[in-house]
Image 1 (cartoon, rainbow, N blue to C red):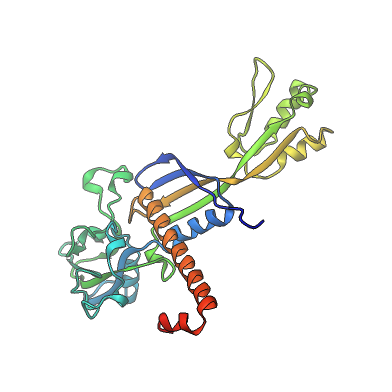
Image 2 (cartoon, rainbow, N blue to C red):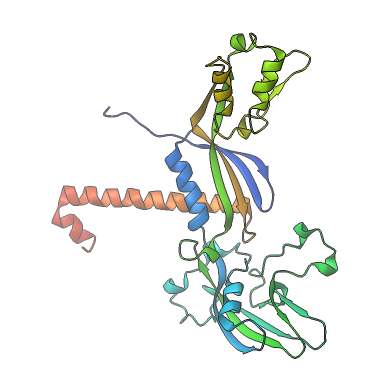
Length: 318
């Protein structure tokens, strides 16, 4: 209908938040926006990762390419990645790493002098920028401080040595997985579960117990004092239809009605540690807004071309 507005105002509610984990609700929008947000978080939020490795000495059992690949997959703290430049767009350097705007330089020097195997880890990487360093997973490991060694790069025996220089650059997961800040991002439709209480009251206690137990996950619970079947955790429902099939097998079709709320989603986000999970969400929303602004600008440009013809294209330099 002409003049009718389809504008919606999505709402976000945080349920659980830790450094590397976030669970939140996204409401009053549709699946296209939810999936766009998920894809942006996985593939388009920038981080910093090692992209160039110059090996000076490598007498370990691993070849140069293997070590370079392992270095690239080490997550680096990327709090300032959004403000950095992509190396391909930087006009202040030639991409050699000596640039504060688009790159960070790392050095690693390790040599084994004893008969005991030496573990060379991410903690041995020395950064030229104290804000971009290998992520420290020691808090979550549960080990003693002396055992918190970082991510193992290679193991050296007596006389073996590794010496290298590495350049870390800004990038996005769409270009390579090493730049993805997300370990996993998932969302599910929030289920709407309604039990037909009148029909449920016609079942015996044994039938109610069998019906509750037919669910692979603990969605329902039988109250032993009242004999009522309660919905205790609707989000545990996996849309497997087992309780619906069980009700039909018992001759009680319609015992329960389960539908998905098409405008309500539950997100689970796990970060690699490069940025906080909460910051990952905020950065993704900002990037999604920039993309929508670009679409709106292109539509305005097309409209101007339609209105002014060659004059509009000429004004844009086309």
